[in-house]
Amino acid sequence: LLSVFIKTEWVGGWIVFVGLIAAFTDLRYRKIYNWLTLPAMGVGLVLSAAAFGWAGLAFGVVGILVALVAFGWMWGVRI
Image (cartoon, rainbow, N blue to C red):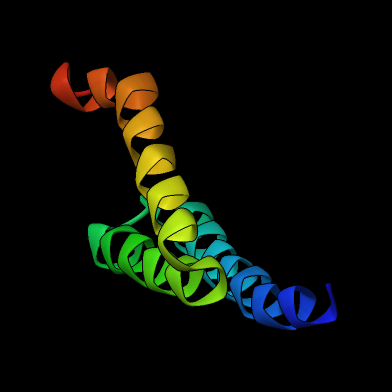
């Protein structure tokens, strides 16, 4: 259990780092840039796979697909 905590500590740090940058750009420029979100998804998948193996990678991919289904329509209609 301790090894899982140590591995997942990096995932939380990555989320905080990306979240702070996204909050700053959103408050300053009213935009969250693709140069931040797309690499963040890739790094998140890599960290999840490193921490939990194939199950972590699958969980991350499912999470991205759920987000695309839930919010992708907004991109499609340009909201």
